[in-house]
Amino acid sequence: MSIAIGAALAVLTGLGAGIGIGMATSHACDAIARQPEAKGDINKALLLGCALAEATAIYGLLVSILIIFVAK
Image (cartoon, rainbow, N blue to C red; front, side, top):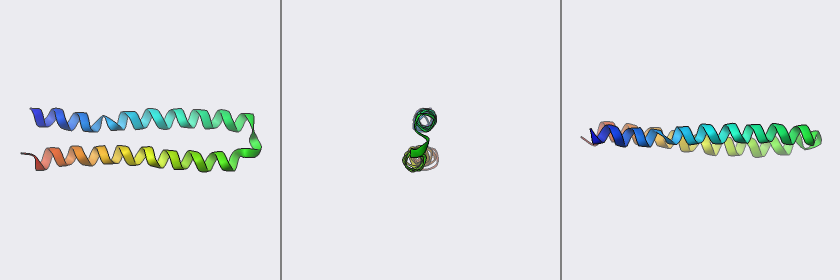
């Protein structure tokens, strides 16, 4: 039972990553609407931030898989 709870907590990193990516995209759209000439710089920063947030979610998924299959 505790293994399942640990795996569920590890997967919750995906929730934080999803919220973070959504907020970053929203703010990037606002920034592009205010200053269209800065679109390239905003896109670069947005993609870097989204990649880092997605990496965090993938690490959480891997940790949960390791918890389920290795910790028995």
